[in-house]
Amino acid sequence: MAKIVLADDGIAFDAYTLDKQALGGAETAVISLAESMAALGHDVTICNRCEAPHSRNGVNWQPVDQEFPAEVDLYIANRGDKLITKMPHAGRTVFWIHNPAGFLRKWRFLWRLMWVRPAIVFSGAHHLSTMPGWIPCGEKIIVPLGIEDKFLTARVSHEPRVKKAIFASNPLRSLDWLVDVWAERIHPLAPEAELHIFAGPQTYGSTGDRKAQKMKAILDHAQSLAHCGVVLRGPVPKAQLFDEMQQARVMPYRGDVGETFCLALGEAQAMGIPCVIQDVGCVSERIVDGITGFVANDDDVFARKTADILNDDTLWLSLHQAALASQRNWGWKEAAKAFANLIP
Image (cartoon, rainbow, N blue to C red; front, side, top):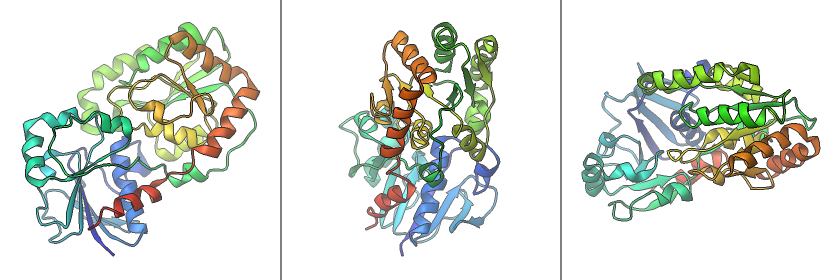
């Protein structure tokens, strides 16, 4: 059994947050990885902005401003520059990043990377490609984010679903574009269909607060398109989103240059939901083009492919079954084993 510390100094969350509200992908990843490594038999502690020490699902939690455990085999610093140097005597330090890696050029990261030379963990080939080659570090390692077991093992119906599309990402990630494409190009082709939007600043804590006005403008615009079948639902806890996904027929999503994995697409595919995307950022890594969904870089083609999935039961079933067959092979257990391989 190894002793592992996973540290995060971003927004506040704890072991119970996911039960009560939506949470961003990076924060969800911290909880999921820690619990999965604990399930492998390791002694795992999360140091973050939780209010007080507590334990759940085999993981110990403590506030990040308290003294860290004295000795650890593996220290995983999540995102924050100040965390990189926090445990100089760890058996091994790993820096886990979730944004395109150009930010590592900043001096506050550079000097710490030069000193510690941690391995840097990326979530995919596209993510790794954003890393400037001269950045000082140890190994560059790809470990895709895991998909939660409940998505990988869910029993889903093969009966054609109602004509409901779903959006469950950050509103700043091209939702304004999507609702316009929906109203102008998809709705005329599938007038009975609805686009349900599960999004809002509440998901992103203080970061969401800073960007709330931008998000509000986009969400207000989406709400103004109710006559075109756009339904604003707001962010919901993971359990409710899981239930909604069991009823969703398609996930249309453009992608975003700032995204490095897209858990929403990964979860949708694991639930057998065909996805229509554009080749922006990492999202083409999440689907198999023509098999589990479509890459459609032209807006008209994007609209037609989305409408085809909404209208054609035979096409939907083919994509749905292919997604279930091919997109359920990498969960947090596999990701945890990959991280465990980094233990010295």
